[in-house]
Amino acid sequence: MSELDKSHIGDIGIIADRETAAALTELLARDGWRVTHIPVDTTPTSSADAHALLLVVLPPDAADAWLARRQGNAAQAAPAIVVLPPDGAIDTWTWIRRGWDDAATRDDLAAVAARWRPPACSLARLEGVFGVAEVAQLSLGLRERLVAAVAMLRASDDRAALAETAHRLAGICGILGFDDAGRCWRALAETRDLPLPDVHRATRLAIAAIDRHYAGG
Image (cartoon, rainbow, N blue to C red; front, top):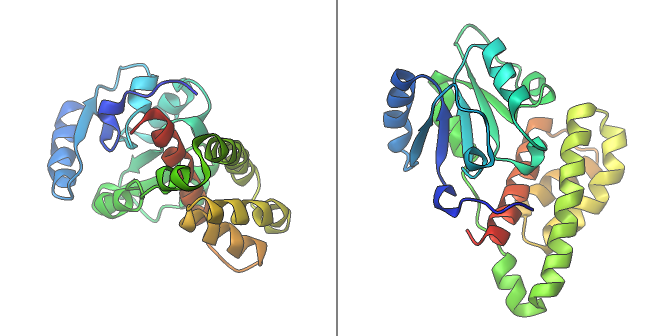
């Protein structure tokens, strides 16, 4: 796993023109976010991915082009939300299937960003009980499974096929303190009707928490 720039962990990066970024910075600062403007013509890099969240405020075609330029596996990078014009209802799952982590309009951006605020992580506490090596083996192994699960979610919404993976993930997520992810995968394992975007978000947040822990953030 590559080294993260720890100075940005917990921040939001906004890919937009300067005027748009300034307006959204004021909005998000009210909720306690620290915001960095990333110019539109900046090539996506690991430094951008060190943020807790990326907001891409570009026309849909340009946003997809930015996403295509992004290097590496998207599940190993900061969650990215595409911010769309308020022209109608947004089908979030369609945008997730296209490779994004969420979609929002400017009107609901603050509420959507709040759902992606980094959760507390229990790994340090567990290391004190079970040992660093044991927790690393479990958590990094879980991370690999979660990355694969994100790919599976984006490839198919066949809940029956997801149920097999769900049983395994629910247990280990619960053991390591990723309660939201554990609850979501347990619901899938029990074939309960849970919105797949919720499962995806909890899974990506667990991956990000593991990355932050081993980056020292």
